[in-house]
Length: 291
Picture 1 (cartoon, rainbow, N blue to C red):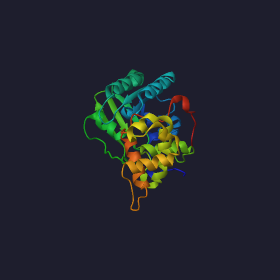
Picture 2: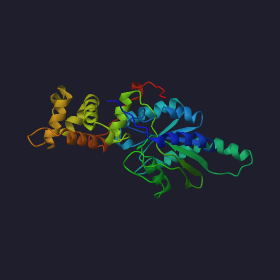
Picture 3: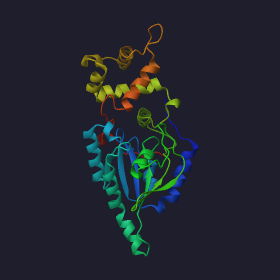
Picture 4: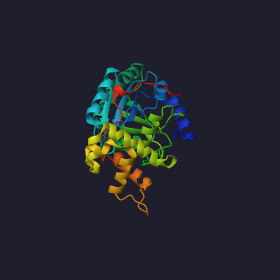
């Protein structure tokens, strides 16, 4: 299965970022803490260039804490502050704002030195669809300033938003890249909902997710679905069948309802019901560039 999703408005967003980048002091790149590598649009490095950057690792409450710390250290080695946040509850927002102010202060000082009135740090938020940008903005501002939704691609316009007297945000819609060459990346984007479920073979996606979870977090699978450790030693499809039976995902004739089983597994992964899971460690990935 080859996964790609690049609606027309995403190309317009790429052009929007290019046009307005000169107006901002700091770029906040919002990533999914469960898949920090796969949730990075590789085009952002070229788009953002040398502009100061802060990384926000969203949904850290759903991610493995020890692996999140490893990512924070990995970014620190690159000279980039990475802040774990929860865009829904507001956890980590004070730390994020402090990092933005510190990172952008030098550019503000240079503007003032050239005769400009002292103004707030100008921030551009970038990220892929459904990574939580609108929720982040709403939480920072304290009111419903950006349209939110639980499907990727809801935010399609652009807007400046005053966070507080010393920080202004420039919001952009989420964008993927035109062609996802690495299908492992595509799969992980599908697991988290960054690609619309409607264009996917949902049972295949859940099957591959389950295989990955059995490999990386077998204890969480046995605990959640009441398995013995030896039950996971067989084929992934056998484990998926048993989950379907245990949860009553049965068609007439006692066949497994794979669509219902798949949606159950994906839903419990995305909500964190299975446990705190991170599918990528800094030591596992090699930085690549996709056109």
